[in-house]
Length: 425
Ligand code: RNT
Ligand code: ZN
Image 1 (cartoon, helix red, strand yellow):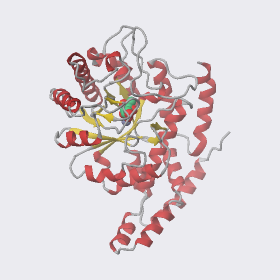
Image 2 (cartoon, rainbow, N blue to C red):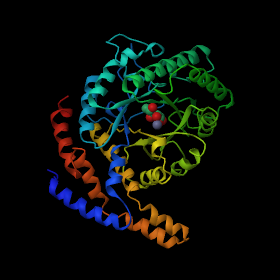
Image 3 (tube, rainbow, N blue to C red):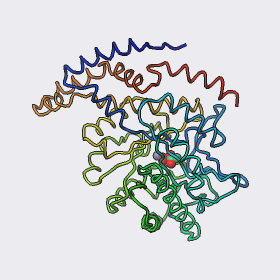
Image 4 (cartoon, rainbow, N blue to C red):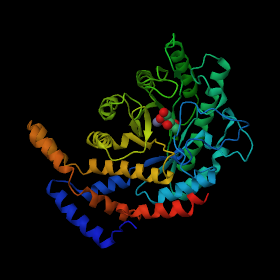
């Protein structure tokens, strides 16, 4: 059994941490309030290896996305996915949202193709979210479909391109219905895998066709109070190593010229040594909002489980220091099929929240004063000292206040669930 921390110990350690932070001008109570009111959108696809529950006849190609591993007991239907998600949600403090993809439609065993899905196919999800007290986000699914074998919104085959335009329009109507039901905009992220493995001769025409598709999709009269759109770039993917139609420059240009379309930055979608934290303050000079896909790239893979590394710390520092929390939508995007999937959700979400907390307890006034005085040594020294300040005690208090296990105690719950539910499937 991993150690449980008593309520008294958490309170005691928090009081002493609070006093220490107060000495450098940080109000930890205020930081906890901000943390508690900042939603993080959990991605449903960690629970079933991005397979979805569509009713198909025959095998379907994966298409640009692959979860690697064969840990037993993935969710194989929507009820199971909801059951697993509930377990994860119960071990994660703070405010959560839940992010669905079109392939999680529930069509009662009847095949409904993606251009024909409707809000009613998500009625159970909407009802479940309401019961959980959380809001939903949404994604059209442009992979894992016979018509996605080559290209989707950028396809030169007009019939195929049209199918995907209609799919995306259907998805935005679903998102609008979700947004209306929950009284909060449903964040819709548009990602397509279109690209080429090797040296296409023509890099321009697919991009022109993608613009035409997006323009048509976003011209639909969808209420932006309920549906908030973003487009997600990628440097390369499986089968698109040489060319991705929706590159960073492409979507940067598109978002900058379309007021209601935001950018989505996925942490794993840039050069292996390129990070996204320095892009935030630039983009938000020109855009009202930004969607983040919090992830962890390792070599060629863009979707490892998030951990509290420097990238996460840097990311949230930029969000907090810039005062951007109310302009950012935070979503998670990773999938690991080689470990307990509920564990992956909880590890990744708690790590992201710890990153945000670490940024919220930075001593702004002190750091700014060193910077104004051009005292680089003092600034660097303090940033280093802060790393061993008792942020863990503040985190444990957050867990306590949220009624979820503090410290490592949640791992006992994971072990129970693994033994009693997952391994018995
Ligand atoms: C793929 C993108 C995209 C997906 C999800 C499932 O590289 O990151 O966000 O991971 O839509
Ligand atoms: Zn992503």
